[in-house]
Image 1 (cartoon, rainbow, N blue to C red):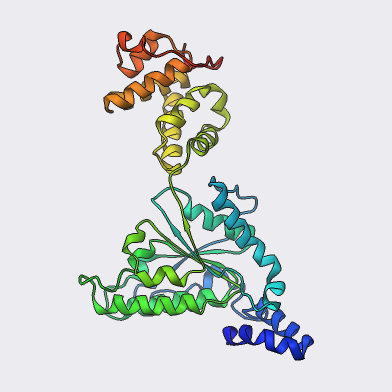
Image 2 (cartoon, rainbow, N blue to C red):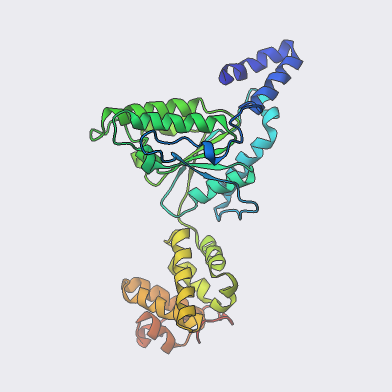
Length: 349
C-alpha cells in the first residue's frame, strides 16, 4: 500500500496539492502514530513458541554514544541516512522514500554493529538485534515462522532492526548443502526487504558477503563496505583505547598504529586493554610493558616485519641497543637505517 501511494503522489499533486500533502504526511508517519505496539518495549518482543526465549535483543538508545571511527565516505553516508529521517515529508512529497535498508559488509571488528547502534542512538530509537541462535530452530518450518515474527514485530514499532550474521539466513539458493526451508527463507527475506516501511531502518550485517544470495545485494537501498582501519584511524583508535594513559604511551602509539595496521578496531582495543591491565597488576611502567609485548610479537614475526619495526624505532629516536633488544635486528643491520625525524616523545630511550 505504501509503495502504491508513493507512486501516486506525483499525479495526485498535479490536481490536488492538499491531498498530496496529506498523503506525504501519512507516509512520513508510517507506521501510524497510534499503533499500540509503537513503544511497547522489550516485554512484548516475540519469543520462540517452544523454548519461550526472546527472538530479539532489545537495546534502548544510548544518549551521547560516540560516533564510530570510520573512513569519511562511510561516515558521510551514515550521516545522510540519519538526516533523511528529519526530512521525511519533503522526500515523500517528491515521491521518494528515505533509505530503508542497509547492507553492512566487512570482516569482524570493523564497526558494523557499533554503526548500527550509533544510528539507533542518533534517531533515539531502540536497536532490535536478531538472536540467531534462538531463531534457527531445529524443527522444520519453525525458522521461517520465527523470522516472520521478528520482521512483523520490527515493522510495527519505531526501531532500527539489525540482522547480524546475515549470511546464515540469506545464503545462496544454489547451495546444495541447504534444505528447502532455508532456501524458501531467503525468498521471504527478499520480499520483506522490498516491503520494509519507510519509517524504520533495516540493517543486515555480514562478515562473508560472498555467501549471500546474489539477489540480496540488489534488494538493499545501499551497500556499505567496512574494512580494517587506515594508519590514521588506527592511531585514533589506539589513543581512545589508551584513554588517560595515552600521554604515557607517547610515541609507542605512533609505532603501534603502523605495526598493527592490519588489525581491526576491536583487535586494537583488545590488545591495548590487555597491556594496560598487565601494567597495573604487575605495577610496572606502561612503556616497559608495551616494549616487552612488542618484542614478543616481533620475535614471532617474519624478518621483513622486524626490519620495518627497527626502521620505525630508529625514526622514533630509540638507541641502537634498545632497537636491537626489541626487534632482534642486529646493530650492523641497524646502521643502514637513518632516522628521518627525531620525536621528543620517543619511547623508552
